[in-house]
Length: 125
Image (cartoon, rainbow, N blue to C red; front, side):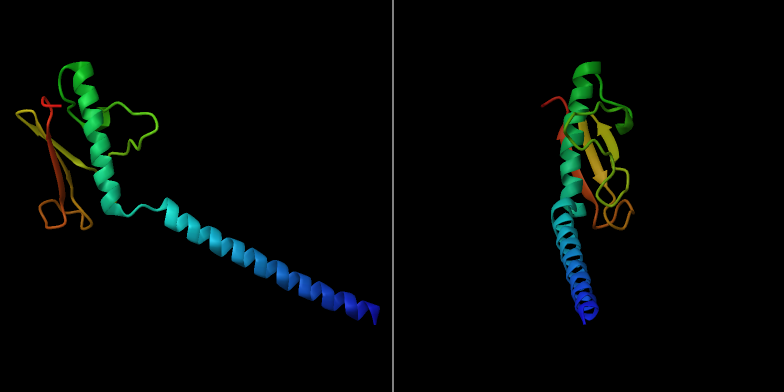
């Protein structure tokens, strides 16, 4: 009789612990997903703004624009990734001090409607 009581108590305890673990895991996953995952479009736009700052820094240090984005200096505390939110490398073009950054968008093909383009005058900044 006492053994049956302990067995029932043990089974109930195990179920409660499993439920608590499931709830904690579920809540943690939801919080992580909502807080840590930035949608690709805003992530791309933010990275382009950071790349702009890095290009300006490079230009001020070397008195010329960089040849490639990989050569840019890092900025501590900022996302120094040169890929867009979909994982494609951001395209860098410069013409008469006008810098253009291009994301190929979700489809990964340059020249389509989902491309994101950001331009700025390097010498005006």
